[in-house]
Amino acid sequence: MKRLNFTLDSETVDLLNRLSAQWYDGNKSQTVRAALESLAAHAGKQGWIVKGYTPARSAATVECHECGSRQAKGNLIFRPVFERSAGPSAIQSIPNEEWVECASCLETKQV
Image (tube, rainbow, N blue to C red):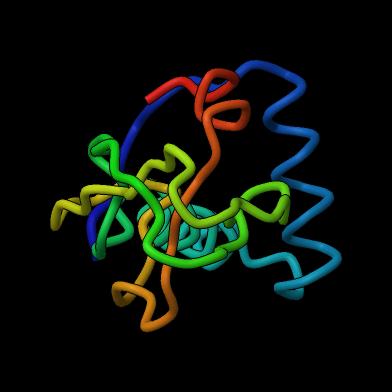
């Protein structure tokens, strides 16, 4: 065990006191550990992220992954390009189902 010396603002101290009393029988060290583990799990989540999209023509009728709109055979669709990375939106595995997005949904995304 190691003692750390740092300063917290009063709102953070109040939050720490509330959470530790409610969930960890007043154990502030355990409360801070749980908060840090939660942050690490969400911020550094390993998996696959969508790096970008590549245009394609649909070979059959498909549905947009985002909005569910039907895209007829021959329509311009966009397929995601996955990259192994870490981040809050990372998924554990690349989906087995066909994942395409329509132009309308893609225009509203920030990739």
